[in-house]
Image 1 (cartoon, rainbow, N blue to C red):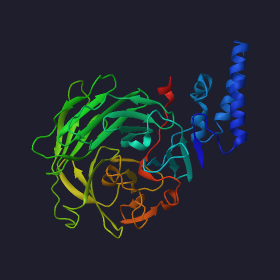
Image 2 (image 1 turned 90 degrees about the horizontal axis):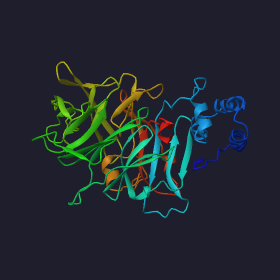
Image 3 (image 1 turned 135 degrees about the horizontal axis):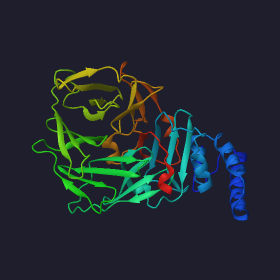
Image 4 (image 1 turned 120 degrees about the vertical axis):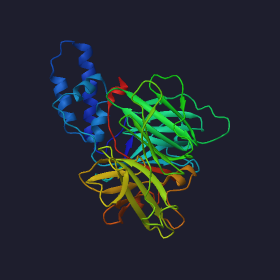
Length: 398
């Protein structure tokens, strides 16, 4: 298990000792001789090319020289192609280890502990949404933060002004690493508001009428997809303009004949594929921990829903409501802690020590991987777990 701290230590001490020495040597030569040849960047490049994904990100934070060298076209360190897990600590357990959260890379089977202060108490905050390595955190029901868990960059958003004590029910986050742009949308009952980079306050809007509350929403490519609690209609809003979002499509959900045991009592989830196809997933987890799932896809031409048994080689991150390209674990759904449990502060393990973190295969209908070892016998009780796909863009630090 490794530690991600302001100046992290790698399990391979010689590697980071050399990185530290080389960074000091770089700064010393910069001070002593402005005409120093490009030997030092070459040495930096040589080290960076040998580092793992996480170590590469750590090293390029050392200085502008290291970052500039890391941007070289000769270095090919890519983002992970498989999802990671993030665990948020519970406020009910005394934290004697200064742990902010825990990260897990299932592909490398590595666990990372994030230590140190991140600018606010993570255990008393709720994670509402994520985008890449960015997380939307709500502190004390009024304060919003955007937090990058790897770079520790934190962006404070305008405070939420509500007087009735309501909690945010749904939220989405979109971050553009290249343009350093972002968008946040939250929902409480029939109330909606959004905030873009550069705005001074939240902008309210009313997208739906006579459709009840929203049970889920997803954001992809300038479009916000909303799933109604009453009609189960999917409404699409376009955010590409400078004015308020505009409704551009509606897809009524009209499949009530298949799997009647799921219709009406299962949990409904909205999702969007890489190609922009809209999905509705109905999930029920019974007392025996048996998972029953039905996945429906809309035909945009006929507006008819049909049940599917394949995600066409993609993988669905249930929390995000988005599919991602998959080289392994194709046609799978990655489940973390469900929305009801996380909003009510329920532990990741129930009274029978069943872990809710699992991977489900759509075609076979079986759960084929669980992660009990991540929560069992833990020194800290984690209140929430989410799958996310890390992306590293250091331009936010410049």
